[in-house]
Image 1: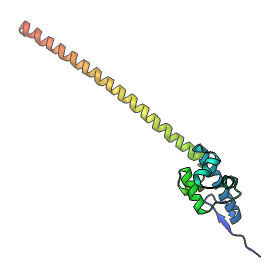
Image 2: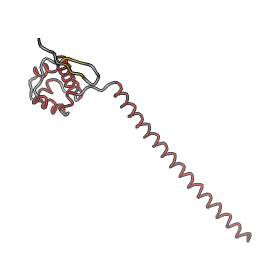
Image 3: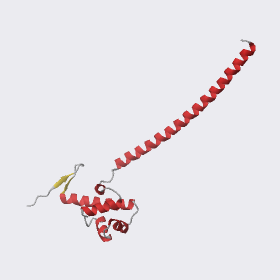
Length: 150
């Protein structure tokens, strides 16, 4: 009787080796397709750039075939990514939300900084004007005192 080997992932989910290989194949196929679309290449364009046949690429993208390590390198180079990225999990909703929050906070910090800098510049300009007026008033008082002999 054959025993089935199992893999346990960080999520705690347990898969048989066959299931895990199928999931990795689907992940690979999806990542190739998504990265291809991201850079605006057709299947034919990617196949040509990677030096593989269109029918082979189509079979990989529907998870009918698994490419060799050499072909994976060619695909990664053609997609302008590192080979391990072909097996990376898509970001979770939480990761996307966190990135969006970080981007929004960075944008707000920049806008606040620009407004504060603008307000500080404006205040400095007003202080300079007041200083000029104070100097003018002091000059006038000195002239009056000199005139009146005080």
